Amino acid sequence: MINKKTNHTNKYIILSVLLLAMLTSLCGCSTDPHNFSTGDLTITLTKQFTEEKKDGFNMYLESDNVLFSAIEETIEELQAAGYEYLSLQDYCTELLSSNKLPEASLVKRDNYYYFTNEKVISNVSYTYVHCVYMGNSSYWLCEFVCKTKDYKKFQDDILGWADSVVIDLK
Image 1: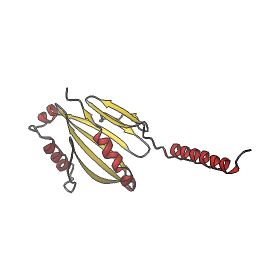
Image 2: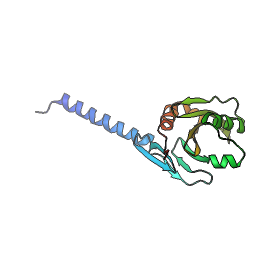
Image 3: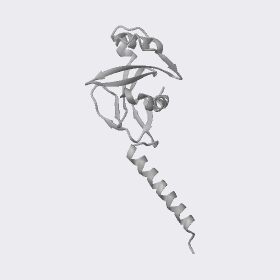
């Protein structure tokens, strides 16, 4: 004889598991880590990111909600442009100044600095998180971009991804 109460509980559990699986697949959420590399830089994101080729970027990755890009600027290029050797903090300060972002606050985090700003493009507000790293002979400017209305939702992920950046100091 089948216990109707147990049978009902089992159906409820199975339906709950199926609903959870369906919602997870629909939201596009993935915690599946995936490494992306270019030159001396490696970042761990999720498999939701896909690599695109964009002129002017060493790396350009897109997901449904967040964009990531990386640009390498060598110390040799900076010296040719008339700059002396800059510490990582000095380089960041120069970035803020040259991009007319004096209101942006420079934040030190582990082995990099970051700052944020907002831009409106086609009536949509975007938040940019600029993370700056130093290699042996270059600086790396990495940017995360998302809609400002979504920034609070992705802020912890973005900073976690920024923490995952490794610069090979060969």
